[in-house]
Amino acid sequence: MATPTRVALALGGGGARGYAHIGVIQILEERGFEVVGLAGSSMGAVIGGLYAAGRLDSYTEWVRSLTSRDVVRLLDPAFRAAGAIRAEKVLDRVRELLGDTLIEDLPIPFTAVATDLLAQKPVWFQSGPMDVAIRASIALPTVITPVVLNGRILVDGGVVDPVPITPMTSVDADLTVAVSLSGAPVGTQGPPATESTHERPRSEWLERAYRATAQVLDTDAVKSLWARFGSGDDEEGEPNGVEDLLPELGMTDVINLSIDAMQAVITRYRMGGSPPDLLITIPKNTCGTLDFHRAEGTIAVGRAKTEEALDTAGLTA
Image (cartoon, rainbow, N blue to C red; front, side):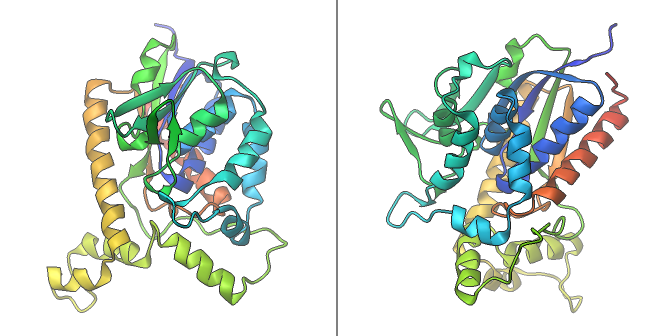
């Protein structure tokens, strides 16, 4: 049997953890694998689309230069809208890289997955403008405003298909590789931010703005809960009860934990029907959902987890 070298790649969603996909692709290339098909939800669609268009290196160089101050400016708040941010400033940079690229003109088959809220089913973008497909795929409910297209209200593909393997079943590949960004948390909060050498201390108002926006999905309460759940005891050695946890939980914490639980169940269900040949899992505490200034460390996690998965499975190109 020939050694598998042609890879169909399914990239999951998970906010800034999606930078790990860059590391995954780097290792696959370095080890001689050829990516011949890509499907992505949310950040998986961003990274997969840019790679298919041959623009991932330029994007990687850009995100590695982002500082926490840059991220605040890019968040683009959407007051009185159906989402906390519009993400248009981020998409403007993606559009600069992609230009007027159409999906059907890409050298590698690519599918961006979004969710039709009214029909309650996934939507596969396999033709049409790249930027429209990616914008629909990243519209995380309550965080990024939805896209209205042809009478459909479209949101993040991760709502119904967190790791889109099914679109890859028609790709002529030796190996299907899936990357989930919702792996079990390990240790403490992930890699330290790699700031630009030009970074200056954030002003007081900017610090408040960043923290307020980050609380949409990520709070210290959630991170401390992960640490406490591990042992089942609080700092004084007493068993944790509901009374101990509720004061730490805010509304956004509950939403975030609920989305994590929902996507974990959906991912297990879908992978049960279409299991990949290789699953690479990125710990969910690698970085916060909105920590888009942590590219360097998150890419490194993607590289390490890919090497570990390939070595464990004994796969070589």
